[in-house]
Length: 429
Ligand SMILES: NC(=O)CC[C@H](N)C(=O)O
Image (spheres, rainbow, N blue to C red):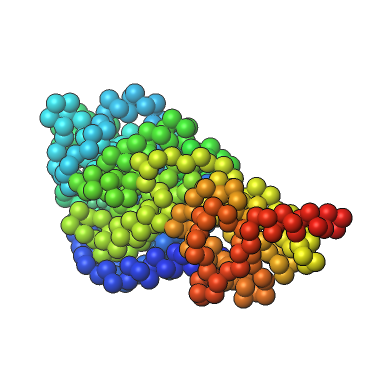
């Protein structure tokens, strides 16, 4: 049975299909050749389950989405104070490739713009191997597969990398670069040329959502403090001169890359990644921003939304006999947010109820977000198609007009009818 979370992600792709403004980046010749119609979305919960749709296995270069991870590595190498003395954390309000340093401190303003990212790259410790090798090894640990550099792309960017060289020489002249300018730029550009998929990126983002621990391998890759620092800087500086617009509308720490990817992180819940090569005037994926806005709205991702208690939504699963018919009763509780609906459908998809009759007892549910409603009506359709009879017990009317995604009405019982049913057949439980 296909998960309704995937159907939901498909719908996001479909609903944003009309957005064809902008163009792939062309200052890097190889990027200009990208197929502008490719599109993909993925999310990965802090439990490590990845959901990906569209061109989910298409590889593209990570570009600036590498910056938060290189920053994390530099902090792990030297400690936060050392790095803060060399790279600031103030939003620049300027384009990502602006040739400028903070006039007061002489530092690059933040690690998400190129000046700060080149300085950060040069800070990453090289053991016996170049810094970029350590960064690639980190990407591979995050994505759980060997991540490699697109050498053709790196060569293409190096050949046209005058602006980044200019930035590196400016840093060098102000004694703000820990390495030699051309080598630092070469390393930085190779870091940006690592090839990833949205699936990889969702896993990478989910490690940040999970406080620095890769959710599937259980390996701690960054300390909690480092992770918090990285996410804070992504929140204020990750979308360059569109950071304010982004944070008010989408409301989660994020980072975009000029190949068309965007990652977003909801701490404690989920990492998301989208891909579409056409960029807006800020250098962020135009359709990617629209997809993220929808995801944020539907899933209630915005961090400034009043907090919801994070507890498991599936209180228990019981086998009962109701009105003479064997039934599986799912007792739900709390708010149905993304993480809770995911836990429920994960259970239903992986462990399909063995009885024809399936009851969802929602008497302890307080609120149902749009994503949960959508996903559950899609889930209901799948269960009905598979021959189940579904009953909703929803005394608070958290979903007043619930039907499955094909428009079929779902039967409702009162709490009394459910309780009567439970009392009548105690011996058969
Ligand atoms: N915004 C980006 O993704 C920029 C990365 C690119 N490699 C550059 O330095 O120009």
